[in-house]
Amino acid sequence: MSRPASQQPAFNRTALAPGILGAIVLIAGLALVGGEWYLYVRYAVSVLALILCVFAGQAKQWWWLAGLIPIAVIWNPVWPISMDDLLFRGLHIAGAVLFIAVAVNVKVPTEQRR
Image (tube, rainbow, N blue to C red; front, side, top):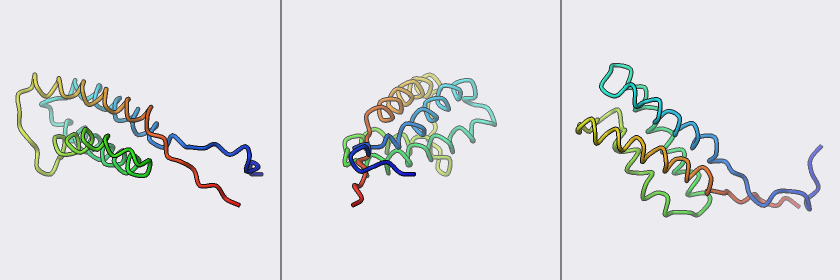
């Protein structure tokens, strides 16, 4: 049984699960930098960043794209960008912080059905 219209939430936090999962993958991926399993970390981070881009667009919070699109490009497994391991590890931490910030702050408004 569905809720009455007066009890419907005004928004959904659709970005919460992919944001937290992306942060977990980035932190766990610190141990895999340079290894052969790191390709899977690249795929996961890139796809989750693009999913968060969609949710930020649905919420009309376009400023999050300034951080999410570079994450999707840097961790792109098709055309990998090579850089110093120390810099890449720092980007892992910064990316995890950004994923958590997006997960907490992006709220997609619900449609009111009448």
